Each structure stands twice: as C-alpha cells, then as structure tokens.
Image 1 (cartoon, one colour):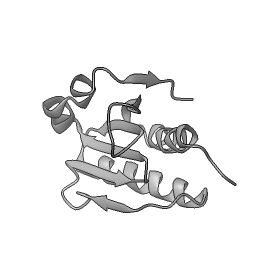
Image 2 (image 1 turned 135 degrees about the vertical axis):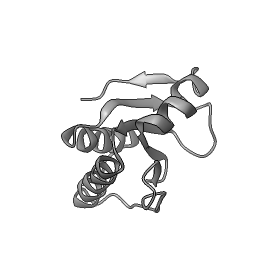
Image 3 (image 1 turned 180 degrees about the horizontal axis):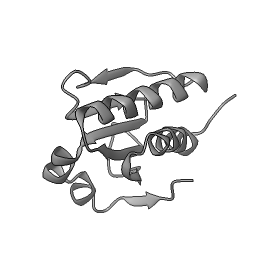
Image 4 (image 1 turned 120 degrees about the vertical axis):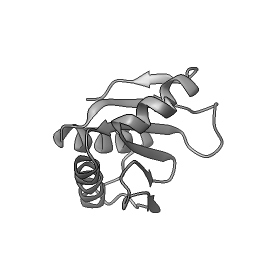
Length: 115
C-alpha cells in the first residue's frame, strides 16, 4: 500500500494520539524547508510517556510499510526526532516543547488537520 506524505504524517499523528500525546500538530513546511515537507509535533508529560508515544508511532508506521530512516534522542526522551523521509516527527517532553516552540519558529507553515 502506497501512502502519500500527508497520509504518512496522519498515521504518525494518529498513533501519537492513541498514546495520549498532547497537542498533536501537523505542519506543512513545503516551500519553507529543503529537508522535509511535513512536521508532526506532539509532547508527553513524562519521559516514560514520550518513549511510549515513540514506540507506538514506530510500530504503526512499520505496520504500514513506512521506512524509518532514524530515531534520535530516545534514551533521554526529552526531544525525540523520528526521520520518516520527507516527514519528520518531533516527540517532545512538555518542558522542551514549551522551550523550543517549533510552531512559532515555523509560523509561516500551514497546519494540517489531524484526522
């Protein structure tokens, strides 16, 4: 089954929501970035929850046949970056999300409705 990029972002966002991730957001950064087309951004309230969110996303995208190119930051679980090619998933601990505020940094990006 072939999924387009927004569908890949939706798969990741839905998996995050199923683990009670907070404020799940998809940003369309096409035209604003050369390294990705979509960001999925969410946070958990503890390191354990962040790790559970990442595991759920990993399991769901692999189930759909989506290649995970890399995962960084999982051990500390403060800001985990998942590289799904042109979709990059950011799973933050709440404190780090508040500090880095990617939505403000990428303020020109359009938000995509999480379904």
